[in-house]
Amino acid sequence: MKNFSIVVPAHNEEKFLPSFLKSVCSQNLLPEEMVLIDDNSNDRTKKIMIDFQKKNVFIKVFSFKSSSEHMPGAKVVNAFLFGYSKLTKPYDFIFKLDADLILPDKYFQFIMNAFSNPRIGIVGGILIELSKKGTWGNSHPMKKNHVKGGLKAYSTECYKKIGGLIPEMGWDTIDEILASYHGYEVKVLNNVKVKHLRRIGNLYSRNTSFMQGQAFYKMRYGIIIGTLACIKGFLIKKSLSFLFWSILGLLDGYLKKKPYIVTKQQGQFIRRYRFKSIFRP
Image 1 (tube, helix red, strand yellow):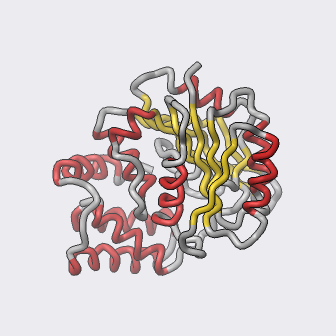
Image 2: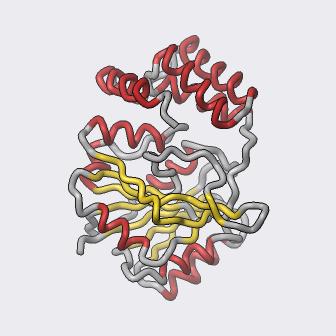
């Protein structure tokens, strides 16, 4: 059995962290290392981490100071990259997990089994959430071929090929597209259900929507594919606000000539890739 390590960025997760850590520590397979990053928390997050560290030799705790806000993209990836730099033991696979999850039994075993296919570069289960009716199920839009950012697992070869994670909005899309660019496949384990304890709301802030449009620009979607992506987001989220602010963010990228995060060649691949998938659910 090959080795794996885990990095968990966490900001003010005292409510969910104990359940998450219990679900990790009770797995039949355990990581070589699990690096827990307390990212500028002002609650009991770090104390909970240290309590678990005392009882589990594979856990390491570090502090990282970034923004005090919950913002998508740069904040969580920068905390992850800091944690990634603290890994010291050899591993074949790297997990980026959020701290508001409950993993099912044998979760890591399922992931390792999927990685037995060397063409697989990214693997994950699916997220389920507790509905208002008290039942667990998929309560937000999910692509069938997309691993959510909170439960990513990468082969080390794939992770290095894609150049690691990019601290930008849309990082958990660009990683999968670049994996495909380098010949790897993304595998979603639809029968492996991970409980997500923090519900994802249906409302999207202006800032987040604006950043999404800028991400389309930075990934070299181009004006046509970028606009179609904004429209598709509107149809999924059913939010006119998202449509307006994401298109504004896309145009802002062009007007201000912001730097791209992929090469021209990668951009050509991304436009072909997105055009083929734009009309898929």
